[in-house]
Length: 325
Image (cartoon, rainbow, N blue to C red; front, side, top):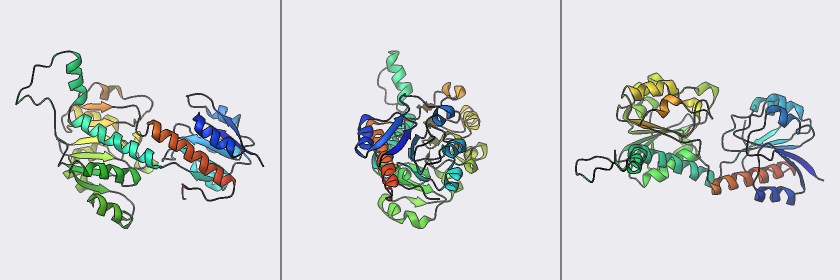
């Protein structure tokens, strides 16, 4: 029997074919944009499956509007864009897409930002563009700070945090991490990467580089604020590839302006898609527009995974990436 599915995101052709081959009757928001709640409501009434993305807010009103909805497949590892409680109350299953390429691409972004920030890549690029390079000098120090052999503190040691540690190991970094989950879950990753668990305050105090790769919840809004920034070294660098609300950007700006932090790299922004204009003015900041897993390999894999897991649920099978309660 044909199953009806609505996708609130524009899907790649490869993903559309996967759904068609499974005899799915697909309705899709066919724009590279984010649909409004009303636009989703117009299409959700009789569908059994919904494909969303981290840019799409799935409210309780949307969830209640579809009497047949059985599953929501979210393209992205995070699911804070969905009213999870409303979905649970209706017995709707939720899947996400923490696939290999998505994890690797986000970890690459974190390491790339760390290197670009520490080595002053952007400001040196500007020097070249202005043709103002004075020539090589032994004591010129245009290249900034070396990353290798420094102390890296990863906050959030899930799949992406662990991949960051694997990559950082190649830079001979001293790796520590903090996570609210039981440390026993990370024994294998500790052995592979050499990372060690440390208390959060200790990690902030000793790190040369702090990478945020934790899930965002209302409880950890502004997890990094004025007090946490004070505990970091003046020579430390902060990198956020998690979610914007984790960092108090006003406090971050004040710390950077006062020289209480060497620099910051931000891929996810507090008022996204709006970028903090104060941070834009600083030359010790690198800002990117939420490109963490924005690679061809990752996005195709994510969309395909969402479609395949949705098909499994609709066919009464166990999905690969079920988001547990």
